[in-house]
Image 1: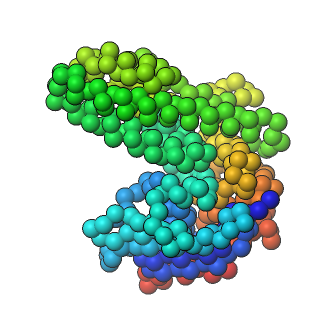
Image 2: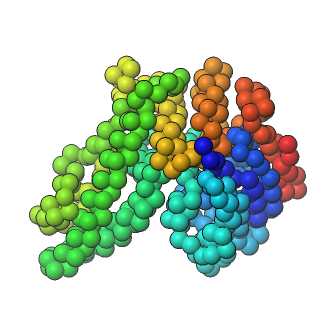
Amino acid sequence: MPGLSFIELTLSHFRSHRRAHLALDARPVAIHGPNGAGKTNILEAVSLFSPGRGLRRAAADEMARQPEALGWKVTGVLQSLHQIHEVATWWEPGGARQVTVDGKSAAQVALGRIARMVWLIPSMDRLWIEGADGRRRFLDRITMSFEPGHADVSLAYEKAMRERNRLLKDQVRDAHWYAALERQMAEAGTAIQTNRRAALERIAAAQDGAETAFPAAELTLGAAEDSAPPDDARGFAETLAANRQRDLYAGRTLIGPHRADLDAVYAAKGVPAKQCSTGEQKALLISLILANARALAQDFGAPPVVLLDEVSAHLDAARRAALYDEICALGAQAWMTGTGPELFAELGERAQYLAVSESDGISEIGP
């Protein structure tokens, strides 16, 4: 299978890194060093080569190295299937984040056409026990990995909903002000629901019959009570119109995909994920990331780039070794972080290693 991997990565004034240049091959990348040295910052830089705001969901100005605040730039050379692409993204004070692909200005969605990416970060460890917002973001990242255009319809929906909510807060009652916005919401919202369901079907298929050391999860798309929209755009628009009075009282839109939730059950035990142990919840998350990667390998023609920050947390040595075996069997370039090289001992020569330290504000990265 042709590969998908970064063979070069350069960071300039990005987070803690004044300048860092990495020359790489297609093997997994094990990054180790003390807390605060900038390991996660490297993963965040890689994540910016996918549509969206990266794995921390940070604003562009927040990624600038301090105290200089001169702006930042991340460039990469990406081997994607049978082609080599030069990609870059940067931000300068007072401007918007820019993206180029092969030297030409591009929209972020273009990144999803040449590369696919999935990630797991420590903040996701509480995914099943905290609010629905995080689960929606998790589901939408999975969905976007299959359908990069999902980002565009999500933005269209959010923009129209913000305008409608402004009318509701101002207690505007003229129906003509709402009609066009509700049509836009209905069209984009129906596409969101369709994309999400298709993504869940792909994850389920990727889990079925897969031989893995990690437990399968049964996923369903739920919603808060009385907040699920109809499946067709016309019906959704009519429902929004019929619910204006209730929404006026609330001052916000109460029905739509922005109220959806992702429910998960530990399949073998029939136990909801929120009731599982911390270790089981982590294993379920890893299982979903691996299923996502397997499905993308089939759809895209190559496994995605996988970002796993502090992946060893809540995993014993056996589970850790099983994870590395599955990543290597998949053929993915997985970028993984940990505090010491011993956490990656089971990888042996199957990975490349980066030791990260900090001296005088400059991160020194070596083999």
